[in-house]
Length: 258
Image (cartoon, rainbow, N blue to C red; front, side, top):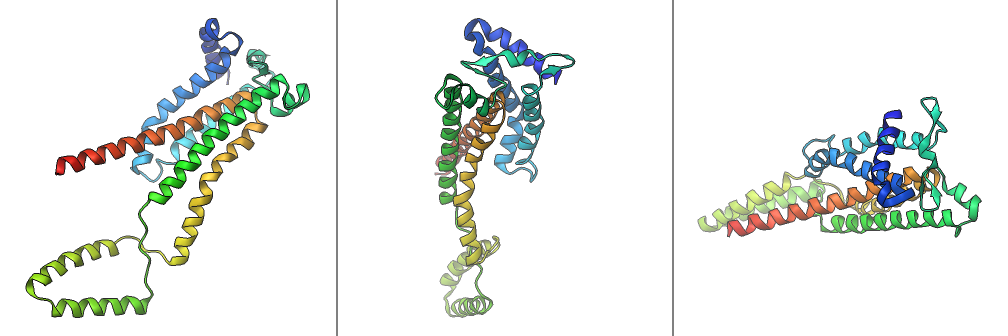
């Protein structure tokens, strides 16, 4: 933890001529951006679905960083010396204070309370952006084939066999092409109608979990809340950029094939 506090303190000193007493808060944001830049290759692999664990690694690797951030602004001493970070502020609010501390000093609309309200508003805006994108992605996703009951599946198979037997050679060739497409579709994972309904419900609820960051930000030090805001905003912006890049590559491939 002493290495982390030293790094943040040094970054704060570099930014102090421009940002004055809010320099350490800006140093936390800069530190978070550096962490996310280091994790970007893993995030890109997770977006592409390269490995099953790729989607979990960026989140898991951030947990120790968040824990160190929490401890650095919760401990009065670091390596036996007074914690110099606790004396730094974001505007009127000390970086080591929690929302309850701000409420005790001036209430919701006191100077420290307004800083926390601004933080909560920013986190809520990022969560809303994430929720909207999540709903749009769920709506744009192709439907999963629904598994037919056994009897219906046998009846459909019998009808296909009869149709193939009555077709002409030309029609048989076309039917073979359609049969290949049907076989490819049947190779996809199939779910029941009940499972599809459950998936739609989850698709509507999961984006709302982004607002859970608000609860965490309300109980951790202000510095840790800044880290949460920065990393969640990076995550949403990163996925939006990767999706945009993927769509542009798909459009380019379609134009080249024409």
